[in-house]
Image 1 (cartoon, helix red, strand yellow):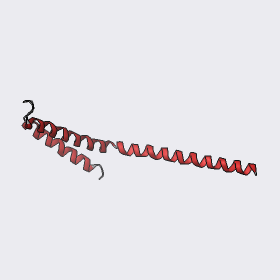
Image 2 (cartoon, rainbow, N blue to C red):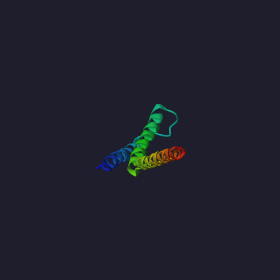
Image 3 (cartoon, one colour):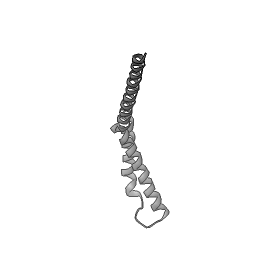
Image 4 (cartoon, rainbow, N blue to C red):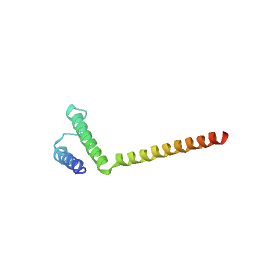
Length: 92
């Protein structure tokens, strides 16, 4: 169910783009309507990119990699602490 939401919203956004782009007046200089049309298309493409990012699971992969790094650092700290304890015990 988690993957259904981004697919639905991306499909709606793409449908909106397919419907609206032919109706926008773009390419007639720097008029307000032209600037609005370009901005609107850019925003819609940004929404599609965000949903595609969610579908591909890029954020989840990054979280997994960060978790691995944290575990490694914690293990290194534990090993360092164990080594210090052994040194202190040998000195006694």
